[in-house]
Length: 147
Image (cartoon, rainbow, N blue to C red; front, side, top):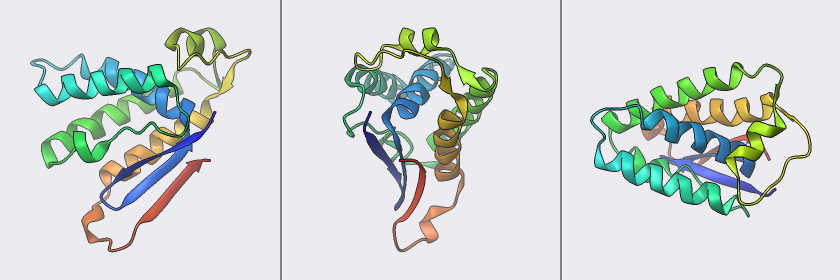
């Protein structure tokens, strides 16, 4: 699988596509729990579902620039990102192959379990992007988690 970038306020996370797609899968589930649903949530869910179906090729992004342009949305996505870390930790050391295959990431088929740490690195990278006051940075600063 290729690696993609998710940028936000002049910083970015570079990661293999699979951890980004799994993050999106859980983010969709977490956003669906909000009531009432805000329009941007519906848009994010549709966008992330499309990214999962593409599966990668180095072109998927959580697109925080679009979905977290203000403090309200940033806080919601930060909460979602923190919940995702807890869900990933619940797997233990590996994520079962059957679970990964059930997501149907762009036709990718896992032939074995995958190390949870890979997915936690990306999720923690996203938390880092969303919780930092990045407006103070003049230059792009990468957060490379799993290239």
